[in-house]
Image 1 (cartoon, helix red, strand yellow):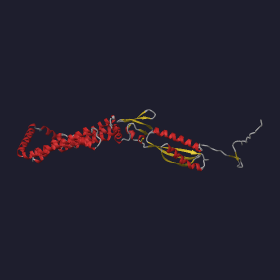
Image 2 (cartoon, one colour):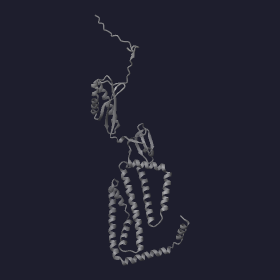
Image 3 (spheres, helix red, strand yellow):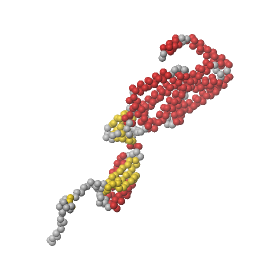
Image 4 (spheres, one colour):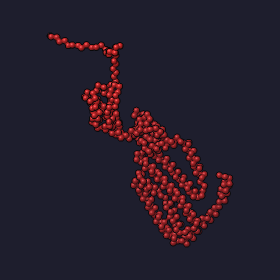
Length: 394
């Protein structure tokens, strides 16, 4: 602020005259009395309409309050708007009535200006209250389904309520000051610089906080879900504002910051619609083609006999020591124990069925052939002579 502006402001403060202000108030009252005396009919009609408006607004407010009492948990738009309406201020209602009376009854300019100012203040802050309630209602409705009673949710909602209230009412205050012809540029700049300074000083805290809010609102996982994160597999035990606690399948508790948790891919195993298993197996090269052609059907029968969803089975490769087949099937639901037991049962049944059908499962083997210098194959072991049983008479 320049020296000239500062001097003018100081002079304005020094020249403030309480007696002059008192005279202005007396003049306003005198003009009001004269106005009422000259326009009492118009004023009476306007007051009647204003009273009806106030009663109607008050009825709407009471309706919103009763609706909120019947449904204390906000779950939809009706609950959100009902709660916002129940926060309607009576001062705002009376200023609507006063605005109507002044506009209809040709009030003096001083009364019009005073009423306009008070109406602007009332309407601005009432709008701020409604906006705040709608925002908080949307947030609560979004989080009520799965995180009700969560300590982290309560703390997060408290912080959100504080931030929303501060931002909304700061904007309302700036709007009111701007309507009073106050230069708010410096105030806005100061708020911006202060916000940047606070953000830089606490960026780590805010990063984890917003990550926690993202987890609560976006719901990539919930408390109790089984997830896979990086090299960690386990169940979610708690979602905090700064970190999430995971109980791994090995028994230890792992604490991971929310910011780091959202920077990598998370696999939510609880949300699986099925688990897929694939068996790769090989049979010996001595298996006849006719028997090989029956293997896919045998595998399908085994899978369907265990009430699992058969996907495919067939021949896949000529291996080094085997003719390779595979079978794929799905186990419905996310239950890993049921999937594990079913996979074991199907594997044992495949082994039992192959043994019954005379199908030999291959294992890695290697046959070595040796030859003489002339190319004649030479057995690597001596030829065994047949032994003839000699029957003797007793």
